Length: 348
Figure 1 (tube, one colour):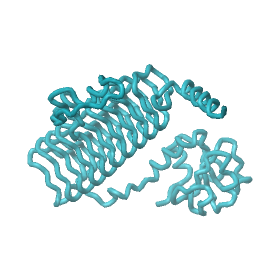
Figure 2 (tube, rainbow, N blue to C red):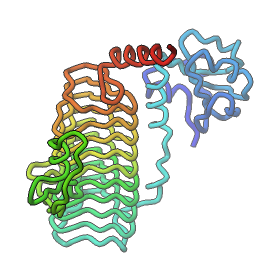
Figure 3 (cartoon, one colour):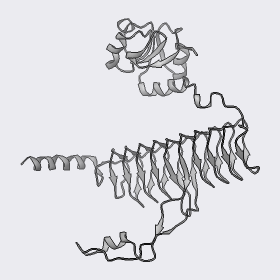
Figure 4 (cartoon, one colour):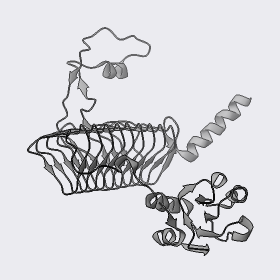
């Protein structure tokens, strides 16, 4: 469908340059943009690519010269990525649910479940007893939702999502394909001291004697509680709590292939990047960011606004607002200084 430049700009609260009545069909990268595309050229470094394209319209930086760039019209975006967020939202035709209406006849819904007004439920969905699905929720094929779960208004569950029993999820939740929420936590114990406990206490260099290593499951009874406006990426998992619920605050964003262990608490607006993992019972304050492959040990506390660089392994509590890197994670300026000192040693 066509989009008019001035209407897109109005949705962003942005200004236009040149012909604001131009129609565009889709977004495109600068070098690949055609005559009917809106080129995303949000910084001066894209100028030459834009000149080499056939684009008539673009999203440009403040101070851009339309005539020099060969454009007829433009949207001015002082914050390029923020403009991308608004434009992609406005121009997303959402093909996963484009033809979905009502409840598909192959869905299996327990008579005790409650389905909100306007909910879309796709083929082969299974919804358990006592579950409540909010108004306007969209559930793609092959999703299963356990007994007594609650899914808020406007939620979107993509294909193959698994929601366990007694999970509570707020409004406007998004789960990408393959997400699992509310599976049992990884929690086991042994009759006597485990090899982990014995290894910590052993004499240096002395091998462990054989012992009964049978693991006894600690069952997860606590479920998961998730706030509003949370998004979880493909194939990520959030384990149920042991006694109390695992808790995820409002606005949390979780990337693909992330593991959140049992009893973890994620404060509001945390951001967990791909392959990050948080071990059981750790608490992350508001706005914590974990870079890709970062790990947090069990029973730790990270203060508000902590940032962990990619691959950081956090093995101790971190106070508010600290940027940490490395293994074991240290304040980043200390980690960098140590790496520089190590390189100097190896050159000698």
